[in-house]
Amino acid sequence: MKETETYYCTDMMLRRIANREPVVAYMAHPYGGKKANIEKACDMAEKLADLHPRMAIINPLDNFRHLEYFGERDILAREKQVMERCDVLIMTGDWKKSPGCMGEFSFAYNHDIPIIEPDEESARFFHPAVFKY
Image 1 (tube, rainbow, N blue to C red):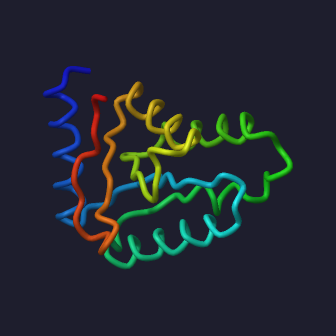
Image 2: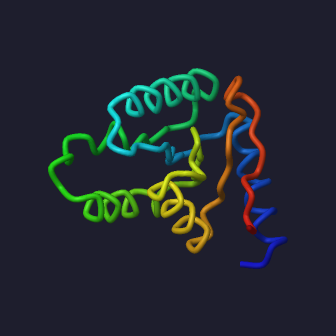
Image 3: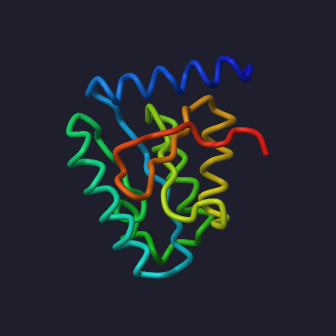
């Protein structure tokens, strides 16, 4: 995807969110085997859902916790099946330090799924995530 197409796609998604149009969002958040991160992710999903009532938020840390006995690779494969059906990927928490989140970021980027990152303070303001390193 060309850089201008990426920004156009992300800008269009931001307009849909701002206009409160229905959006299915996959929310990535670091896990690292820490139960506290599940709670942080659930809190962020709840905050986003309150602020964006027409956004259906898929929180994999909540959705896939019943699969904890599977290996991380199997869980990531299932997450990618879900993510490819979503309108946008939302990166939360300290995602740049998480191998799992970086994998989700890479998958979304390679499948032309818009990637956004909410402002951690309010989760109200979105800005495009960094696409090039």
